[in-house]
Length: 313
Length: 153
Image 1 (cartoon, rainbow over the protein chains, first blue to last red):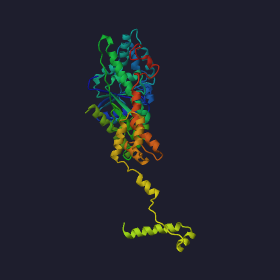
Image 2: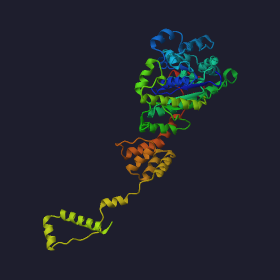
Image 3: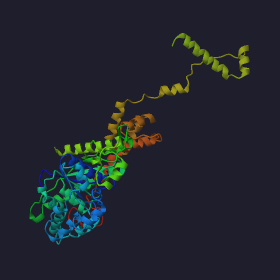
Image 4: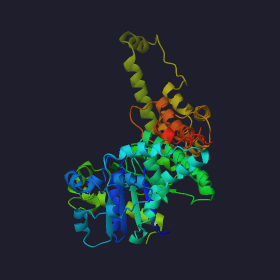
C-alpha cells in the first residue's frame, strides 16, 4: 500500500482484553471524523465480523467466498489474490455515518483456525535457503494483498488479530506499520505485554534476516512499531481509574520501550455487551445518559490520541 | 497553661488518686499514719510517643520509592524498607504514593510486599519474560513454521 496508509495491528496475546471493541469503535470514530478506514477481522472467532453483520447474513452472503479465510486458501494458485472482492460496507454503521468518511470491513471465518495448519505445511524446504524463501513468502502474504488495494486510498487499516502468535497473526504484524495493544489493568495482562514485545522483536529479527537471502537479493525489511498500550475496561472512582487499576497502569508506564495512551476505554457492560447485537459500535450510538456520554467521550479521546500518535490530521 | 489550669489539673490528679485508694488507706492518710510522696515518673504512653521518630515527609517517601525502583533485587528492597523503619501508616502512605491500592486488611508485611513487587518485582518479571532464548512459537504447529535448520531456532 502507499506510504501514507497506516496499517495498524490491534493485538494482544491475552483474550478478553477488548481488542474487537477497540478496533470497531476506533474504526467507527475515525470514519465519523471523515477518515477512510478498512477493518480486517483476522480472528477465527469472527467477533469483529459479528459486530457489524448478523451471523445468518454472514453465513448466507459471506461465508462461502467473501472471507479472509477464502483469500488465504486461494493462495494455492500461486498468484497473490485480490482482497477487493472481500471488502464490504457494513450497512447499519454506514447509515449512521451518513456519508462521513468510509468504514469498510473484510470479514473473518470460523474456519480460519485451520489456515494456520495449512500455512505451516508450506514452510519447509529442501534446503535452508528454500526454507527461508518459504518463510518470507508465507509471512508476507497479507502485506502483498494490501499492496494490491492501494488505489482505495485508505487512511488507516485496522487489523483485529487473534489472541495468539500463530502464522496468520504474524502475517498481520509483518503487514503493519504499527501495533496497538489493548490491555486490561491486571497482573496477567501486564505479563502478556512483555511476552508480546519479546515475540514481536523475535519475529522482526527472523523476518529481516531471512529477507536478506530471498532470491539472492534483499527483500523489503519490516519495522513495525508499538504505537502504544490502550487500557480497556477501566472502572472509574472519583473521576479517574480506581486504585486497583492505577497500580497496573503505573506499572506498564514504567516498562522499558512501551508507551501508554493517556486516554483509556471505560467499562460499561451494558453498552459494550449489546452493541454488537445491533451492528453499531458504541461510539456511534446516540447519547441516552451521562454514563453513556462518559464512555463515548473516552472513546473519542482515545481516537484523538491515536490520530496524534499517527500524525493523522 | 496558666496557674489556675495547672492547679485544676493537680487537684483532678489528686482526686483520681484518692478515688483509687481503698477506704482503710483513706482513714490512715487522714490520721497521719500514711503520707503521700510525689514522684517525677512519666507514663509509658507519653514515653512511647516521645520515642517514635517523626513521620517521613511526602518528599522523603517519594525519594524512597525512587530508590526502591533503582534496586535490582527484592532482598535489597527488603533491607532498604527495614532500614527506613516505617510504621504501618507510613507504609500505607508510601503505597499510595506509588499508586498502589491499600485495603484495611493489609498488614505491614503485605504492604511491604506490595511496595517491593511494584518497584522491583515487576521489573524482574518483565525482564524474565522478555529475556531468555528467542522463540516466537506458540504451539506444536508453530514449531514447524520456521526453517528447520535456521540458526535462530
